[in-house]
Length: 61
Image 1 (cartoon, rainbow, N blue to C red):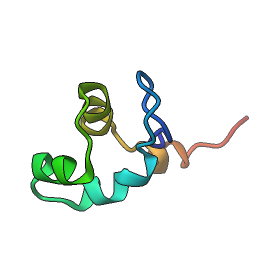
Image 2 (tube, helix red, strand yellow):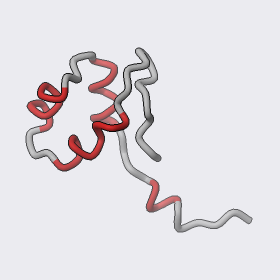
Image 3 (tube, rainbow, N blue to C red):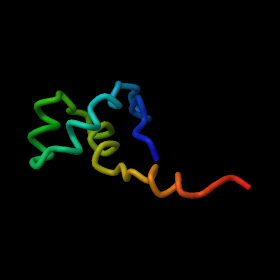
Image 4 (tube, one colour):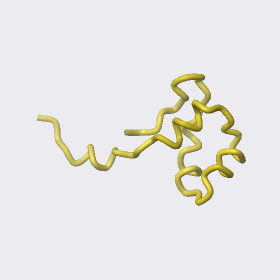
């Protein structure tokens, strides 16, 4: 739903990188420039799907 603040595997802070990654056209170059080198952190950014707008439409009963 919301990008995690830290990587699940290694604990490196990655939450602040989401907007730069999302707006980029060349994802690989942007991750290299931001210093995201570990596979776990790259997978976290590449595999994230932002569902917050979809979930926000529903109310709790």
